[in-house]
Amino acid sequence: PSAARPAPRRRAAAAAARAAEGSGDADTYEEDPLDVLEVTDVTDSEAINRAWRLKRAQARSEKERQRVEAAHNALLSQLLERRLNEGADPEVAYADRSAPLPWKPKVALAPEKQRLMNLGVFLACSYYMRTSGSPTNGFMVAMAYCAWRMVNKLGTYIQAASEDREDVRVADSQKLNRAVVLLGMFAGGAYALVTYGFPLAPALAPYLAMAGGPSANGLLFTTIAAACTVACTFFR
Image (cartoon, rainbow, N blue to C red; front, side, top):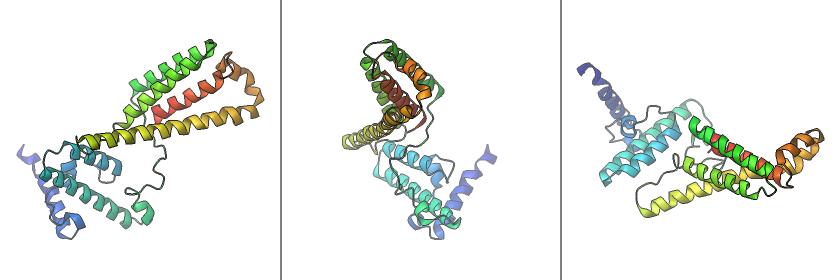
């Protein structure tokens, strides 16, 4: 056991040495920021920011919050210095603080169990929309499920800074806005595909008629539901 303990001390000493060399916010920092935020990769900015939000929300005192902030600032400084040393473009190097396309969908594969659930709900709603003369009910169920699944998924990435009611409200608002925008993007793409894309491929007409069922809106509803299922399964 005694042989396994020097590693954290060596890392802490290295962090202190970096601080002594003048690393900005970490000039008095004596702890390894990786240990404070419980992350392992200094190059993974998303993991660092998620851990920072989580630790900040869990902090129970001002001293603990300052400790978390210091660790976060130290890691961001190291990440920025690494990118600049590797010759990254300044706009790319500072991308963690101001994303050029903040609403761009990001790949985030759902767990296998959720993927199977998403597929099952879509197939059930699709069958109802195809066989029913009024597919609106199946479409609404599919969209409500996709919205719930997306907001639930975003909860892993968007967390309240603290347990304060206002911080929780802000986080909930961000999750809802993000879910609406993402699902709207995919639904809009599906609408454009049905309206402008499918007519350009008349050979697909028999298959599209089978997929859409007897209702005039069956194909549109099914395509939008499929697109939103893809969104909440593979993106965030």
